[in-house]
Length: 320
Image 1 (cartoon, one colour):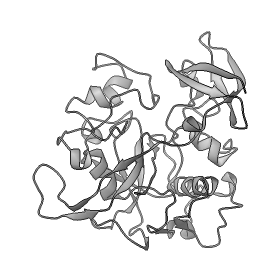
Image 2 (tube, rainbow, N blue to C red):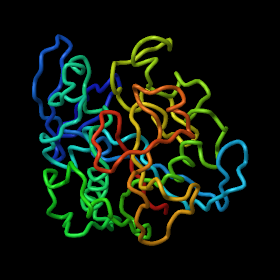
Image 3 (tube, helix red, strand yellow):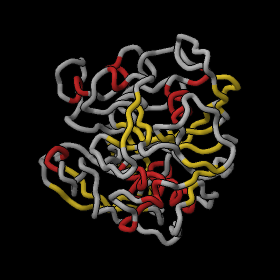
Image 4 (cartoon, rainbow, N blue to C red):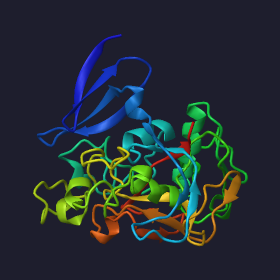
């Protein structure tokens, strides 16, 4: 095999010409477009999972809330799932491409940047849990999610509902399985705060939002010293938090497993459960959000069928 090196957002990435490849539209500096086949290392196409040590009694926030929860050891993906990672697992997503992609409605905004490292967005909660199960199948792990009348081995991207669907909304997650899943509301905030290594920062990794988050003031070019692109920005281009997790504040909101009627904080489930309520909890803030949106304690809600430009996700799994 022939080794070579290419540059992705200024970061050199090694590649090897083997069976692992994916085709993307890419933007060239003179604003022309080409379609190219890149051979990516699997470390680029699959999420890097980092350990998060749990807590027998986590009281969230610096106020030492009297309400506590037991957080089991788990792993969290280092970054939000990127367009490259999502397309590698899901296949042809041309029926519902990310807004900030070469085939998306916001393609005019990305003529000056590679899109493969942008967080995937405009995918609903159903797409997120489908990705988790499809990635588990790819890596020969146990499936966490069960959806009535859905065979994830044969499921295609086109088969995932883009409107409200009771079977998908009533999915169960078996937390005893070793496959991929969305983090719970409590797991997400625990990790964003830095877990046992927390410094009680306002944002994930700093009290200086410009150091760790893409949000409206630096995607609109009005505040921070270093400003980014309008819209989503490549993952891992801001500083990490105490657990070396990137973009836990800003860039895109992130789906969690939890429903709006679920208790917070809550112990990590140990068996199969359903989310409670008709909405799903979102965390992290996004590129067009305010400072308060991006705080580690900030949360929002959306219908699981909703496809919104500012919503993406990251994945979790059991600890070892």
